[in-house]
Amino acid sequence: MRKNKSQFVPAKPHARLTTSSVIRMLRELKGWTQEELAKRSGITSTNISLLENGKVDIGKTWAEQLAEAFKVHPAIIMFPEYEAKEMLKAA
Image (cartoon, rainbow, N blue to C red):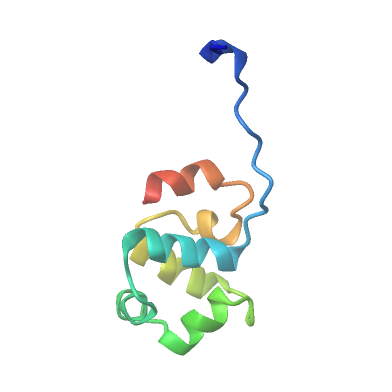
């Protein structure tokens, strides 16, 4: 039995994006290591790891540094639940 494309409805996302998951996702989409992101952002690789694992909260300065490295608006990193569509453009 064949289905017509119009019979399908796009799936709703179920995963909630967090700042830590966005940082890791953007880094991996770029193909960078934590060390590479550290060099590009000026944030130590230790702090990148802490951010990606949700062990520390991101502040305005780090968000701006990461945004500059990724070439995205800081809001994509700080408020990922509002900026999910824009994140796809960043890759």
